[in-house]
Length: 108
Image (tube, rainbow, N blue to C red):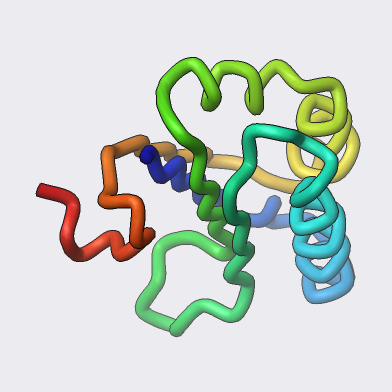
């Protein structure tokens, strides 16, 4: 099992930041059940003031091939192009293996 984590900062000139973050959360979480390879998907948008990024997405998939299918899936591409890229900057991403329980703290 793999966990795919992506984080962004919201664009500086963005008005209605909370509305946009809510829209991103809604659209990304709607991918669950649409993209067959997604086992679990979560969006965190209420970050602590100490955070360097404003929104984070956590996606669980079976393996690297499933991650590739998720990344290329038309629904994922549409959400990324229409609802994430226009409003965000400074994307960071990490992918790592986790145990099937989904507990990211036991990834050995």
